[in-house]
Length: 237
Image (cartoon, rainbow, N blue to C red; front, side, top):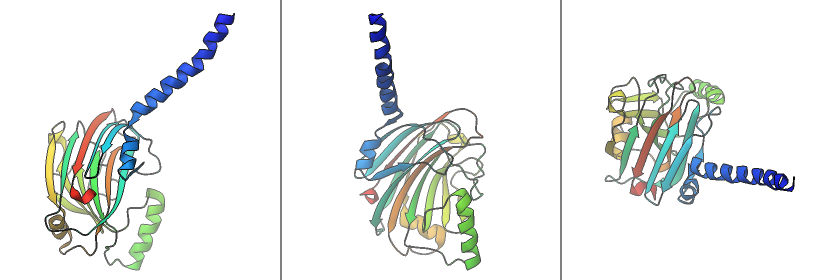
């Protein structure tokens, strides 16, 4: 009897140790990323966090994510940097699948398994007040987009690779990969000022204020996909 009590007393401790170990593996490196200035959350109100492994430093960010349906993660780094002509963002992406339910061209229906967004939070488009009110109420339901003009580099579904299109008034998307690139390592170096001019026909009016990294798997998808992303740039400092 005494041995049984000792054994029973050890079970909760063993379970706690197993839970702690699995929790660490589930979100390895998140504390390191936080110390490098990256905050972690979920994109949208209904997502749960996936299994992930993260590393970050002054001028790089790297993540490996196992996306099951209904999961998603969003990392954000707040900065304030006026762009120089030579400033570039090196992006490496690998995705072993696509989100077939993503409507890449449709606002609120685009769900990229991997994307990077450069935010110019002190710049904006002149929108009619009715449009601003409509965007506010849609944001209440769907979630608010980051304030300011945005350039998003994404792994898409139905959109041809190397496409550039306006997803909404203040966001332009550049598709870097899709179905034919699944499982392949994509490497791109983007001159952010040049991309901004190509997207909006002018120079940015203000600094880069945030960098967002997102990985999303909608609940309507089937099966798990693994994705990897790495960013390297002096912009991140």
